[in-house]
Length: 83
Image (cartoon, rainbow, N blue to C red; front, side, top):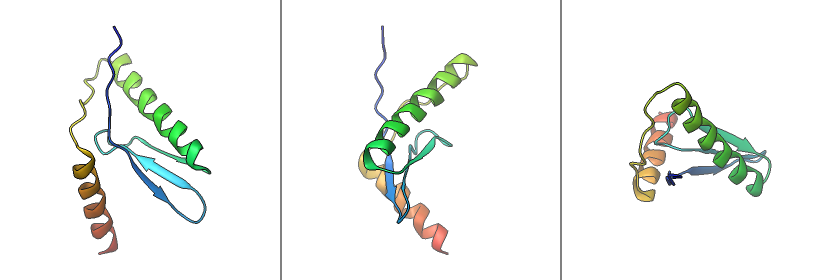
């Protein structure tokens, strides 16, 4: 049986590339030069992250944040970064 989990992802665009991270999976981040590349890369990063946790017998977090909560998390992080 394959379990399908959906984690919210925050995407950012800079003048050079895109970046993305999943707030429910600390440390799970990726970058890409194009929109298509970042979408593919963050999906791969999430899969790799969860597979690594499973391989070592570590629990992996169930998705907790809604899209709205993820955006609030992101905005708060940006505000703290600017201080």
